[in-house]
Image (tube, rainbow, N blue to C red; front, side, top):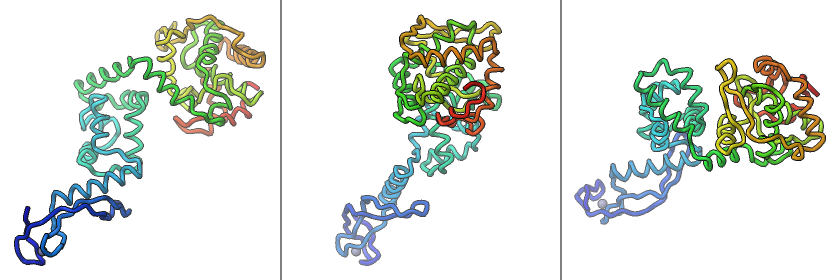
Amino acid sequence: MCAYCDVCGAERDCRIVQRDETYPVKGELITVGAEVMLCVECGTDLFNAELDERNLELAFQEYRRRKGLLGRDDIVGIRGKYGLSQRSLATLLGWSPATVARYEMGALPSVPHNEQIRRFGDDVEYVKELFEARKDRLGQYARRKIEGKLSQLNSVPEEFLEKYILAKHSIHNDALQGRNEFDLDKTAGMMAFFASKMKDVTKTKMFKLVWYSDFLAYGRTLKSISGMVYCHNLHGPTPVAHDVLLAYMQSIGLIDLKSDASGIGESVDTLIAFDESMFSEEELRVLNDVYRKFDGFSATRTSDISHLEDGYVRTQMREVIPYDYAMSLKAIQ
Ligand SMILES: [Zn+2]
C-alpha cells in the first residue's frame, strides 16, 4: 500500500498501526483504539478517509454507549418491528422525516428524542397511543400495515409476556411495590374477588379496585397485597403495563376478557374461584371495604374518584405511583 507523504514529498509505502486516538464528540473527548496509516519512511500520519471515518464511527459508538443513545441499526430495527417507513415513524413521533433519516445515517439523537424512540421500541402501549392520536395523518397503506403489526404484537408468546410482566413488577423496590414481592396468584385472587362479587367489572374499574386495595392495605399495614407497581394513567392509577398483564393472565387461564354490556369497553371475568385462604384477615377486610365503597359505581365514577387521590394528583402521566401516597387516601381509609 502506498500514499503521498507530505513530509517526504513523495509516494511512500505505508502501514496501518493501532493507536489510542481522542476525538471530540458533542463537547466530550472520547478515546478509542483507532487505526492510523503511517509513512513507512518517516513515520508521519497519513490521511486516509476510510480509516478516518471508521475511527470517528468508533468514537460515536463509544459516545452512544456512554450516553445510552440508540444507533442507526436500533432505529431501523424499531421501524421494522412496527412495519414503519421513515416517514410514518416521523409522523407518529411528531418529528420531521429528515430527522429520522439523519439518525439512520448515523447522526447522534438528542437525549429527548433518544428517550422517545427507546420508549417507542419498548412499549407497545405507547405506540398504540401515538397511533390512535395520529393515524389520520398516515396513508391508508401505512395505517393498515401498522395495525397488522400491532395486532401481531398482541399475540406474543406466554414466556415473553411473563418475562415482561416480571421485569415491570418484580423489581425489588419496597417504595414502589409496597414492601411486598409481586405475587401473580394474589393479583388474580383480588380480581377473582371483585369479579365474583360485582357484575361486569370493566378493565378501568378493575384497575382502580386493585389499586385501592393495595394502597389501602399499605396504608393500614405498611404492606401491599399483590406487590404490584402502579402508574398514573389516563383514567386513573393502573398496574404498570396493564394491558400486557391482562393479556398474560388471560393466556394462562386466570381471567377472561369480554365485551361489557355497553359493547364499548371490556370487562374482566375471573376463571378461577376466589380462594380466601390465600389472604390474611386484614387483607380480606381491605378487599371487603373496597368492595363496599365502590359497589354499584360506574367505571367513570370510580375513575373520577381515583383522580382526586394525592397519588394521582401529584404524579405525571405514566409516572410510577409510590406507596407513600397510601397514607393520604381520600375515598377510603
Ligand atoms: Zn514520509
